[in-house]
Image (tube, rainbow, N blue to C red; front, top):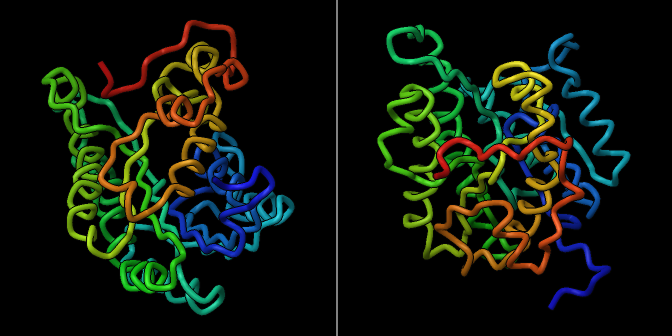
Length: 282
């Protein structure tokens, strides 16, 4: 059993898509507290009044928390940019031990109202971006496994719930998110002989992020959500689990915490509203 004061991610290298704010930043901060090396691939180079935080403010937070950071301004849709981010991560930190596929776009419009531009955006960021970053990191993750460094790919995507109501409610978004989950399913099988843990993680409830506030219901929805820290604490438990054994799972955040003996979740409440079940969960 890991000692309470141990820092299992100390010296490990994480590369994450997105991470300027919200859930991705919370996950990266938890790793930084251990002394991890972290590369953020994010587009937000200058402040946006509707989306607080940039890649530079995120990097400063991570360094203050104890991490070493490579902020890489780039688009996960750009093959060359992602390849360069991977190359520079290996050059600066000596390898890659963890991939977190965090970047995601959302639009819940029905099929007859969504533009094909937005459809393509979600496909390219969510599904293709997850596939691309994971693919390019595989050689480094294999070296990490050979060195006994417990490599993981963690994708922030839901269980593959084939209840028709989800596809029928927001088909374009469902296709894009399930594409991320299919990447988990396939890579877990493809890489199971390499000792690389490949899993997805999804929240039980909505999470208080800018996207939830701006796109899903404003302050009222935020008040009925949990904070990003519940996602971060669950992700930390997944990323520090034995990679050769913990693979091919579609984890739910509160179930991960419960398995670790954490059942009092009141500290994760963002407000006093009735908690709202997240998408794709019945």
